Length: 303
Image (tube, rainbow, N blue to C red):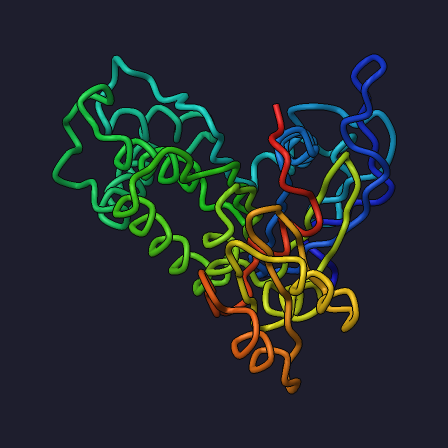
């Protein structure tokens, strides 16, 4: 089966800055695909090229088997985009925002009314259909933007950090709706800074940094490959622990006042560490996608 998205040797330059540096990837039909990376890694630039907002400097993008540079009108008619920013019309009601957007796709009025009611019900906004956007909570606004991106019943949904700034309850509400969309067979591309979000939703993901792809795989595979299933965090480490880790060649990150050990399955490292080095603070936990992300992209702050 042909991938729904094919990206080959994609570049994007802004004057002397290379934001996207020769990346290639595919997204399968019905796949929930994640594009992760720190600030400035090239995620949003890539997303904007995927839906035709920003032209590539070089490379090929095919969506639905069509090249974005040539068939962008046909492609845009079949995709939905949920952007980071609130681009709703504050002068319109919740229902009017969806109805006006339906007009951009030349959806007949009767059909637009039906789709609007269906989406308001799906995103639990029916009781706010006559409210102005300015009167909505942050979670409601994000759900409305998501609803708007689905008004044309797209074959591909692109989500650029859809839950940024939401409280945990609102974020979980959005996740619930996205899981239902995934179960319906909709192809979805997601960028996010929330590793829990990516782990829960994505079938497969790539991590990018400096405009290049670092890794590609499912969340579970990436955790096992780059971290291991089990992690030990030790506070107040002494030189004896550092000497032990060096002698045993144990993968770890030394953060000064804290050391993080990445332990593979089936060895006795955990028992040795627990017996000899857990004198102060010691935490045993499962490896996470956040561990993978930080190991590959570093822990320094990004602008």
